[in-house]
Image (cartoon, rainbow, N blue to C red):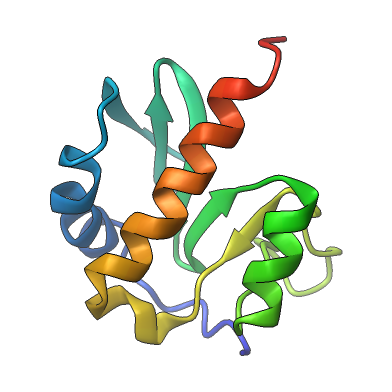
Length: 116
């Protein structure tokens, strides 16, 4: 997968809102850096940007998403990819079950992490 960097963060939020509504947690989003940060119980767990939908994941889940065609989040082509955020393949944008699966994994990871 190669990021096209032409995604509309607002459209991505529209795609994710029904998926996120099914999570049993308080979810909110905040505009940031031309995109959105999505928070579960006030902890950021999703980045929506021109790069796509990126979930914050454990190291093992991050590796699993990469194995399924995702890639480490990098806002600029010249910067190294994130080791904690992975961008889902664009083809998943119309697959709510896939998005739900990874949103759930991300939320569990973030809620289990110690708040800094």
